[in-house]
Length: 121
Length: 121
DNA sequence: ATTACATGCAACATTCAAGTTGCATGTTGC
DNA sequence: GCAACATGCAACTTGAATGTTGCATGTAAT
Image (tube, rainbow over all chains, first blue to last red; front, side):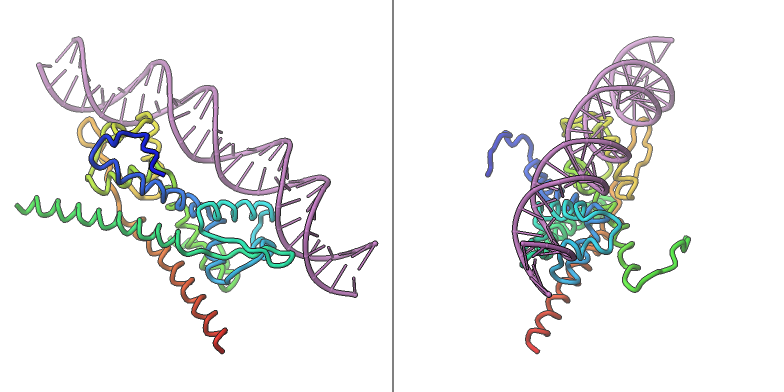
């Protein structure tokens, strides 16, 4: 890693790439079907593709593609169980995304407080 | 509000629409440029379109469209200030999204605990 | 008034994501 | 072996998202 193609131009441009890494996780969660899959998997444990397709109005192949998108960002993991393929939720990326949102919230609170302090001065 | 078009069909199908409502917020955050805009606005207060365009490699019009996408889910808000248009971060939808992720995390923890209790029994 | 700045609007091209269909492959059970 | 189930793979269509260019509009400053 650290290809270092950019000359680190400004002061705060080092912080943004970390956020952009989380953009992929948000993009994966930004689809109703995928969000439903994540919710189903984190509640019911490991499920097969056919089971996950049962509740939806879309094709099994479409569900497979959505699961692949979720797997690309590490939100789910697959394991062969005989003739079927069980998909399980993986909490780590979601935790990272949650912390990312918390950090944005914190920065916003700090900005508000700085503004208030300046007004009172 | 409360149009009540759906007859509340099943037991747990009432929970998923709430999640799907948050999918739009995640989709809005799921773009590197937009995530950068949100980060910039929550740190630096209200900024104009030209200011937000300065750091990027894309056009002013593209930034405008991204801001519109963020505004559609309520993440930013605009206000005219003379000849320019200041955009400000709005924390409410992000807080809702953060709580949504926390709930998913909580459900996962509960599922793990249930599984452990069953194994020990 | 006129010049410069900041933005709005609309048409356009291009890329990508979502979903489908059709068929092939592997696995279970009789 | 054979039928039924579960999945994999690939081509295709469609619609939306991203970004651009060109011009119009409104505002500020001289």
